[in-house]
Length: 313
Image (cartoon, rainbow, N blue to C red; front, top):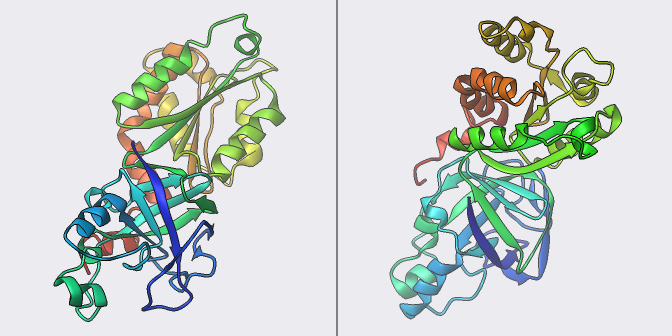
């Protein structure tokens, strides 16, 4: 994860004009910034530029102010040009996905005429809005080039401090070793409505690409994690649950007793793992080889417009 700070928020009502600094702006999913001329149902809804690159350009003698490059967001501490298409930029509730690196240079722009070159074509990036909200000047921004994971443990005893939650630390360590960024964890009792609400919140706010649950998948009448998952799921992914059970049956016949399900809600994959720390890691291991491709398809990283614009256009 890379962290930076939003230094300027800029918009313009007409294309081809410099953008004007604002204190804040509202970002709409699949559209862009309210009131900005570049908003729309396309791949360049928001433009971002590194504040540090602008400062270096100013040191060359360029007299430029925030918004002169047509950028929506100026952010310090992040070298956007070094990011890959598909990287996620998160600030507050807003989630952006990088869709294009650089752009075709307009040789007639005023900055090019004054300086002989312009940094926006090579340093600027563009993004689509995956989750909306408001971004204000001074807010932090986090960039994730890896997939984000959230771990939710369901256990009456652990929630009541009667037993240590040993599974979450093990899953966190294994996910990080596999290249995931664990962005949050939670511990709840075996309460169907509370579990469903917590899972829906993670998915609807797009806090993570994959939500891993542990516990509540057995035959006890208090085991309700699969039911809570299906209560809020949009689509089931039965093949993943079948893969976990088939692989783990080679380790123990008790794997047949797991009722865990896998499903999606919006662009988040939900995976139910057993409550046993050892079994949870073993089930996760079974999925790791196929998760990258599955998450890529779920999020549209495979075959979408982003791949078309990986080179400067």
